[in-house]
Amino acid sequence: MQESNTLIDDMKLTEVFITEHGGVYQSDSESCWYVDFAGKVARFDYRCLLKLKKAVYTIDVEAILLKSNKSADIEIVFICACDDSYVLTVMEIVRFKELLQGTFTMLELNHIIYDRLHRLAV
Image (cartoon, rainbow, N blue to C red; front, side, top):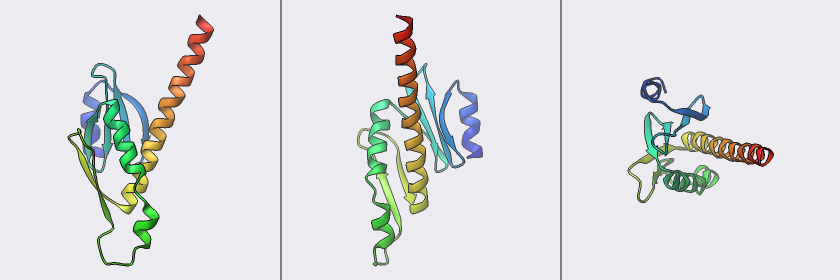
């Protein structure tokens, strides 16, 4: 995560959620999110970020771990209409799910706080 943090530090981004394995940052000026995970920083609009979340959440980690054939324990996450894809190991899938879950929890919390403050002000 060190090399990609240099790129993040050079931009005017707001931290949404980070773990020791990655982070998600918001760019208000560009109306997008940057996902720093698996050694790369990828730019997503909100629609593609939702597609990424859906693609990662639909991966059944338990099924991957329990399969008895000798295929590799990796998954390729490709999102239609988005430029980036990920090749993830089982542990990376678990970590990515954690990162995305925290991100969307923080976005929802931000929405709730904004809504409550706006109601009080009006």
